[in-house]
Image (tube, rainbow over all chains, first blue to last red; front, side, top):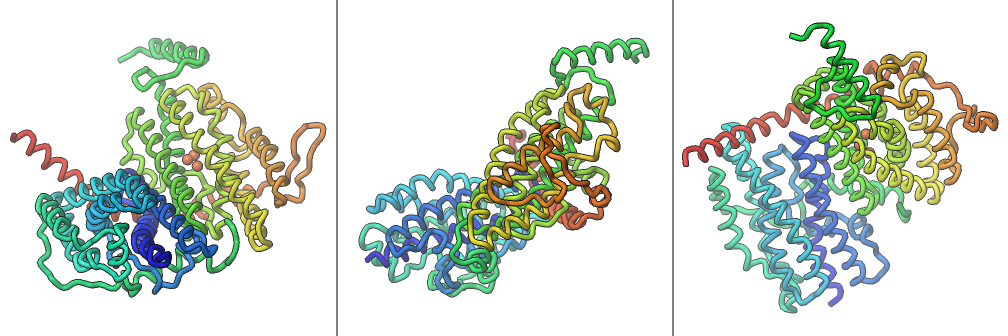
Length: 250
Length: 317
Ligand SMILES: [Fe+2]
Ligand SMILES: [Fe+2]
Ligand SMILES: [Fe+2]
């Protein structure tokens, strides 16, 4: 029971952790000061959420593990984020497309999580909704700007959407643990979000003069801890200090 | 066209206003030299904030805990914010952010040399906050009363955040200094590497410093570089002692008579080497900025094109 809820929380929090880490890579290297500040803001929000989730997870599991142990001392196979969020910052179009494709899901998810029987999760969701609404507005605006900007930006945004599309379906897969937690009225049934998600996404893509990819071939594995080759490198940065200097306080 | 006499009169009135502690505002008449000097100092300051994001940004992905990661992200974001207000203050003097970037990227504009040193350990995040933000505060607090209104107001806001950064950096050092032997060693090593560059940050010794007299009159400067340096040393040495770290200066000694610390000789050759562009990371910092700017060009163009399209659609309705 405890173990299931613990793992369920990781399934939510790991997405924010890995995406926050990706955005953190960009700080100081963005196309303008304003976008730098905004991306850092999103990263900060995500890490704030991550801390709430992991602190709660640490309390549930109750074996002395801290939020940092959970964040930084698991093996790659134990991270259960979706593949979408670990994709690298190839260029600003990719970064914004990844953000947009995640934000739309994230907001739908949080709106449901807010109704959870678990008061802590419901409270974290309620607080995060405000933040994630802003993320979605920001990333949607950029998808529109780049999609309907210049010829070059249109092409770049289209190829980012095309390239990342294959990772969207996984957002709506349910693990065995998800099913148990959903049956307890604590978790969110993500399969129910799928239709709304693709409607919202296609609508915005259309508004951005972009076409919705038709491919029906999708990648999966993140939720089972089987990741793309990119995650290992991200983790070696994320875990560097904790691995090199174990059992210390910072 | 004004006669020379008229200009002379305006200049006298202008200097009198400053002497009365009145603020000069963007629309006020000002001597050309005043505009240029302010633009130079303010843009250098803005560039320093932006370049300053890089050495600390270098540790965001590797911060040792989530709490530290969040604090570091917030700090680097504050520096971006400082850059933003300072570029806006520069715009009030008629030079756009893009023009100033151009000067930075071409190597024409200077920025604080301290950011040309590498950040090679987590303790450098502590040392930078404690020493570099600390020295920046000493430089900048007097500017909260400088004569040019937009600069003075920007500085009030910036200084509040810099002192928060300074406390946060010192707190990182406290934690390391009270930690395991390895952590303590990491902290001492960072202090060893950042101490002298931090002293240099307060500027060349007075004998070699240009533009001081005029800047004093305009309240762009209130104390000489050497006085500021002494203030920094006197303030920082007890902080190091308190946490059991050693200042890397064999000549450092309390001077009862002066009520200040005597200190060893600064390596001004190193200072000029870094100022002239040959420090350990000058090239990396510049490549990072120029690279970000060039990679961002199509994005900025797209944003502009999109805004124009929207504008046209609005007009058509
Ligand atoms: Fe500063
Ligand atoms: Fe700053
Ligand atoms: Fe600062």
